[in-house]
Length: 65
Image 1: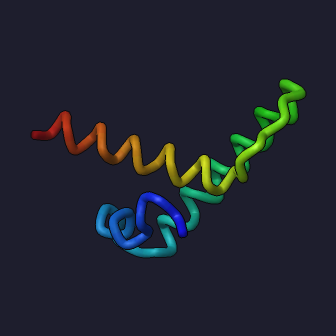
Image 2: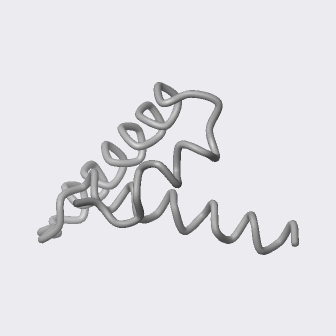
């Protein structure tokens, strides 16, 4: 089970497709960075990407409030 819940993230996007694209792009970037720096990632890049996107959305909401 992913934490944060996907349902919460989808509320911030116009479509699921856009969320999937953003997560995939970020996951690819994380993977490429780790490979370039010869780092070993213990967590899956998609999980890291979802966490980072959720954190960014939380920070945006805090700044708006």
